[in-house]
View 1 (tube, helix red, strand yellow):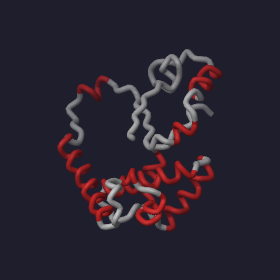
View 2 (cartoon, helix red, strand yellow):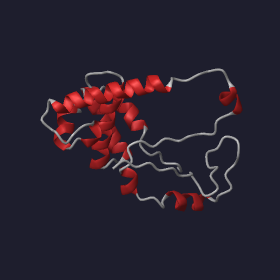
View 3 (cartoon, helix red, strand yellow):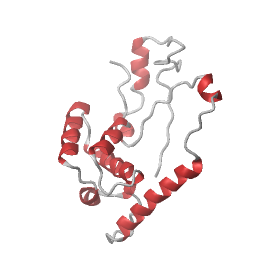
View 4 (cartoon, helix red, strand yellow):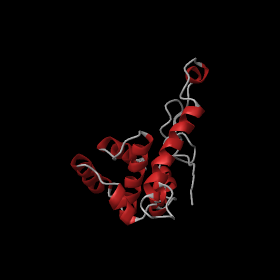
Length: 169
């Protein structure tokens, strides 16, 4: 099952906004952010903050990557994954998200530098076993999108960036 969720950082929706100040009390923001349980958040692989977009950026001439180019890159990554799992005899696995622990150990090996990074992340971010496995699968997917044979530290670092951020300190 794939899940998508969208939430505001506080009841008024402006906590962290660069242009409009938040009107919520600190205690209210903390209570609001705790309403989604840790185990549920743990099951969401990619957490991103989407900031306000300025008029200048929207009206400018700069074009991003085309949908066709993105689609081609995603299809190439899916082809890599299909080939990987077809040769493994795991007929029920078609993409990295479907991997179980055995496949994660087989296909998501990290170099020494990546293992050091993951060890530090586990300690500092207090990651669960579920989060550990989800991060490795995401790093493998990022490597596939980049066309890399093996997941490297840079792919792991990117995957770690998608974990939920602690909004209040």
